[in-house]
Image (cartoon, rainbow, N blue to C red; front, top):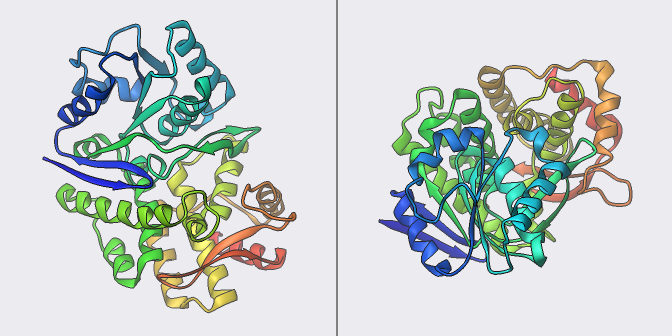
Length: 354
């Protein structure tokens, strides 16, 4: 049975049978070349679920290296070269089977090859299911800066299959869960409390799949209302201004952390900033901070790092007129966007991570 969510963000399919869902979509491309993008992990653990689909073979599987450090121009060029050498044309289809890196770079490769070919996302991680695979953001990292180059391009479809989550380790589960907490904070207090009280380390997968669907619906509300991020979609950047800076800093220190971990730490700092500027209830700041510390540990940071992290934030793509822009909260479910802050307040918020 398929459940479809057809919106301006594309066709999101909640599927109980990945192979049948994909075959249904491939019926539209019977005379066209089909390509599959994977990394070594998704080729080993996820590809076997669809390996016997007749359209897949050695001449159309694009295998790249896994990890954020490979979401770069070199990998993008490799994908373009493969498509060119195997005679892809403007009617070809690229299927992205993987996590956030695969969905981001695969979407960007498809959107730019021959001025755009169709692509389908099959997110295999919790983070990709609730965040990077939907909403139309594609891109690569550049000069160590996160998602510095990219564009908006909606997938023809996104297939959400709950079975994929059972292949994940604890760290990748927590990484995706951070984005779910962000969505819950943007929705309301009840949604936030539901996530905080979910036993992520002792996962009830049936309940998790329900929470994933709810999280996707929250994101879809913002994306449908503002596909190109001109207004309220900016709320989805909550936790990311500081979070992306922490993620970049960790890469520069050669101690990279997962994206969701960076977002978790970023939300703690930005909730404190929200409390300082807009009176967000401090007890809820403490509740999130305690949760993050217990599940995600502590970010390796000291006072001497603050200026370096602030400098990284000056390159954030959301900035305007050389001012760092934030999306913050007054209450759960009540957000404000395009907020600029004094450096002193940002430094105070970073001190909450010590």
